[in-house]
Image (cartoon, rainbow, N blue to C red; front, side, top):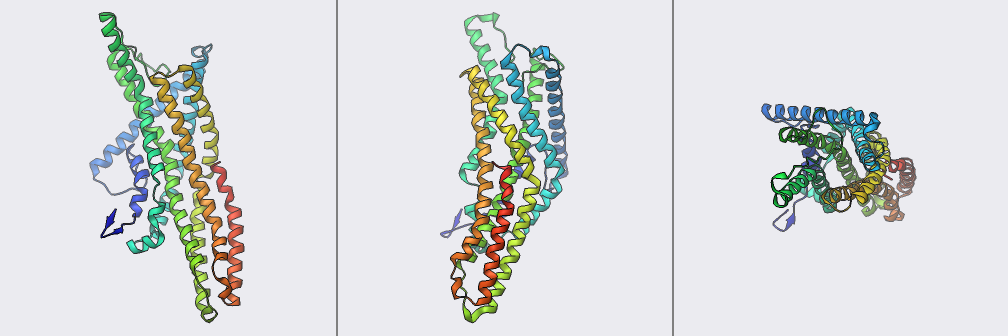
Length: 381
């Protein structure tokens, strides 16, 4: 994005586009953006379909687990159910948490939007583009969506390939295997074309619903974290590049007052982000590790067929999702702690005694606040 040799800096809408469009794809618009009435009705209908499909699948998964005779003696099926169980629990908690905190997330998002630099020159001063979604993160999101589609539709593709192969080898005796992404028996027998198609639609809408909440919650967290990182980095640069003078003592002190006010505002965003997502992401560590173990075991046992490859791809996507969350968590801590170093790196020795005392207090408070807010990382690693 360039114009007349100058790079156009990203807008606030660019930052929130990816998480916003992900949730809109399941009919959930957390920001309540203006839209035509018919579009709003379609989104609400699809959201209800996805919600109903999700809990329908969850119900029959739990029912088949309780009916242990359908699982006993088959470790592969047990691990397959365990993988779906941990993934569903993780998604369920994210669904409940996201909907419960939706107003606070909206307020935090709007608050960051209000302090986002408005003019392109101001955005360049903030170095906005360097905090836009990194390419590896964007590709990671695209890869995750691709893998989910692969896992959901791989059984259908595999069934079709097997049937076509049998048609060419054994002719009229070929039978369609009716493979599905979910191993449990539903309330109907999906061994006829129409019922199999209906089962595939149920499984797709359910997977689309809870997998969007699964990664979408983390995407919203990363979106908000990236903007807070931008403000921390800007404060650090401004503080490090400031040159105080004995002759400008009052102006220097007013500069520090503005820095303190801005820092406290950014810290309030930081604290709100931690209150919303902190414990959720700490729990995510347990469920992600459990899911990775189940997927790895299932992939090894199944081998490198289409289903095994799809689950191996899903293994890498889970690991990538965990990395993305850790990346932003560590970046937040590093930039927050760097403020005290930025204060020390300036030419503070040229300032007045009052300026140096205030700067020393800022350095001590910044270090203490960084230490106090380091528990934020608990949700990430």
